Amino acid sequence: MIPELPGLIILILVATIISLVLLRQLAITRFELKREAAEMKLFRARIQAVETDRKKAMETPSAWNGLRKFRVDRKEHPSENICSFYLIPHDRKPLPAFLPGQYLTFQLDSIPGQVKPTLRCYSLSDCYRPDYYRISVKRVCAPADQPDLPPGIGSSFLHDQIEIGSLLDVMAPNGNFSINPEDSSALVLIGGGIGITPVLSMFNAIIETGSQREVWFFYGVRNPSENILKEMLKELNHSIADRPNLHFQVCYSEPVDNPDALLPYERHKTHVSIKLLSSLLPSNNYEFYSCGPPPMMKAIKEDLRAWNVPARSIHEEVFPCRAENRQTHNNNEHPEVSVDFRKSGKQIMFSGECQSLLDLARDNDIGIASACEVGSCGTCVSAIVAGNVEYFQEPSWKDESQLIDEGLCLPCVCLPNSEIIIDQ
Ligand SMILES: Cc1cc2nc3c(=O)[nH]c(=O)nc-3n(C[C@H](O)[C@H](O)[C@H](O)COP(=O)(O)OP(=O)(O)OC[C@H]3O[C@@H](n4cnc5c(N)ncnc54)[C@H](O)[C@@H]3O)c2cc1C
Ligand code: FES
Image (cartoon, rainbow, N blue to C red; front, side):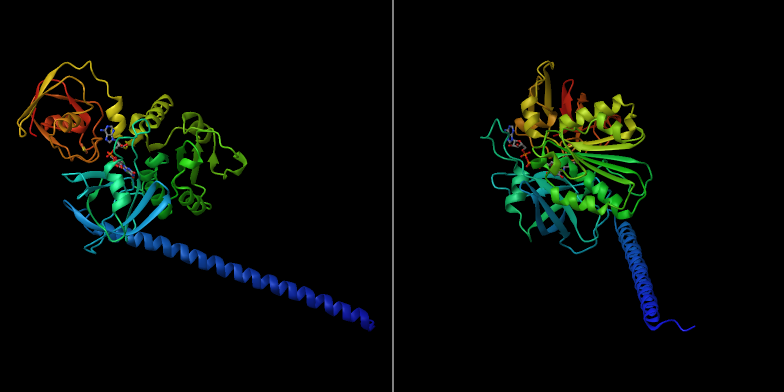
């Protein structure tokens, strides 16, 4: 029987529509598959490029001796008081790799009012890239309660006098506060204020290597206005969206006006504390790396110890605070001893009024070169001719017993505990 004409037309129309829909779906699926394959290819190429760069860098000499000239290629202001400097070697030779968390030491010459060069350390704030090193420097102002004091010498000079094209004298990457991105242990990285720079370098290195390692990254500041790297952190959070092993949290310790406007990775009224860590982490079985202002570091260290984290798993770096050091010092219980600076021909009586042997020298116009002032770079190393010192901060350049065996001391982190003669 021949179907009636209208029925036949409807049948043909329905069949055509179904075929068209199926063909379209097929085309979409093919397109999606092609896109995924292209993305995967790109991803593999990126990983391959990172691997090649790292291998190339590993083959180049790991560092240089003394000073090397770097040209400022780019300056960026991620916030009002922070300036990031992108540095490329003036000699155009390859850039050696460094371990994430390490720092560069700068010899800043020709600072107005300074007779001698000023040495300052700045952490590398990005992971290794073959084209540049990056540092991010916070402008240090006079303390709020002493506005008449001069602002920070090194940071002001870098912010105000160093422009694109300026040359800087730089010592090779250094420091033990660092990770090997290829290790597999789970990590907790904690940065407070400008102390975020070395841990940011560590986190970026983990992201770049495509590591499957479990990593928690916490950034603690008082309020959003102190979140100095807002835009950079937004990008960072975006780049880990499809990496379930990587976690990132910004903690504002103070309440914010509009909590609903916080981004999913932002919390308020929250310190980076044991309360927070133990509520998020399944155990305390991590390597902890933290860098921040001294009070935060002290609290975190005490918390971690109270949480039974072994001392060997707690790694920290403190940026020195000369203003605080000068203001908070109160060591008047110290017995009076004589300190003989042999080369300078000066003998000083010391009874506890200085923060460190370095400060004692400085207050008496005895020049001892220094850079980190936290016992990690070795710049201030001095030979002890006679007598003993005691360390108020554990040095990381060499450990205390090694320094004693070699008849050396690091004046930035020790005080005399007997009559002493040092070769300065
Ligand atoms: C390993 C390491 C890594 C670091 N990484 C970074 C980093 O990534 N980014 C960063 O920004 N910093 C970093 N720092 C800190 C940096 O090295 C400097 O310490 C910081 O920039 C301040 O140096 P400055 O010369 O600007 O200030 P300084 O000249 O040292 O002055 C510091 C403070 O002392 C005050 N002051 C001046 N005179 C007196 C006085 N007579 N009495 C009392 N106070 C006085 C100043 O007003 C200022 O507030 C790092 C430090 C170390 C050790
Ligand atoms: S100044 Fe760096 S160890 Fe003393």
